[in-house]
Image 1 (tube, rainbow, N blue to C red):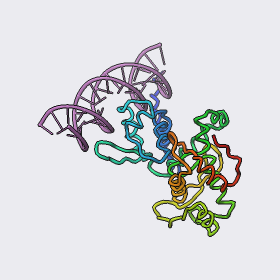
Image 2 (spheres, rainbow, N blue to C red; image 1 turned 90 degrees about the vertical axis):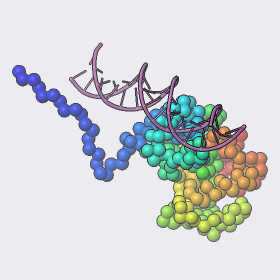
Image 3 (tube, helix red, strand yellow; image 1 turned 135 degrees about the vertical axis):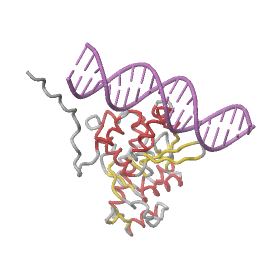
Image 4 (cartoon, rainbow, N blue to C red; image 1 turned 180 degrees about the vertical axis):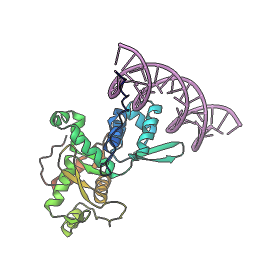
Length: 245
DNA sequence: GGCGATAGCCCATCTTAGTA
DNA sequence: TACTAAGATGGGCTATCGCC
């Protein structure tokens, strides 16, 4: 009996030209150390390589390797400042993809996952790549919609006259779109499973609330309502069912 | 079960930039 | 100029997975 021909090495099927390179990006997120670094960067801030190594609980050498991979995959961007290198998420698309993945990852264990105190703080209010997310972010978006403060635009929303009037009550005057990024659009909230507002307008609103002292940065991505914020901001938002610690 | 490929880890070392 | 600190790189070790 002749020897059977050796089987050709299994090669992955050729990707369809219409197929997104999901395996490639999923492999980046699949590693625990990398996912911890990405989660750390979801605040939208820059972080040094050393800071990210500590966040991921790995040595600087290991972190450096992971950062190089994420840089190559265009998940993150890097800026050199002297002998430091500062990393941030590459763009809002990456941030939204990570939030969406988190939503899928905790499907089925949602309530128990959010029962821990530190998670509860994140659920109430957090920074999502520069804008406000969590229950407070959802309420802010809902309040704008309820007052017809947003009008549909090709890229998402513009601020309507009613919206300008309401924002003026909050002491904020919307600036003109910069065209560097989308102005205002929906972003599905990982913890609330409802939309909050993202984009230039949302970034500026969070900054405004921080400058007014209505909100303050907590640990990591967490954002906290200050006593002034409870007095000045909360009464202006719809759905006062939000509980504050 | 053995083997090879792959990926992740850490240690040691190197490079670069800031500082005294 | 030497020292120090931060980050990158190379090499070796280990674990896992797929194939035979």
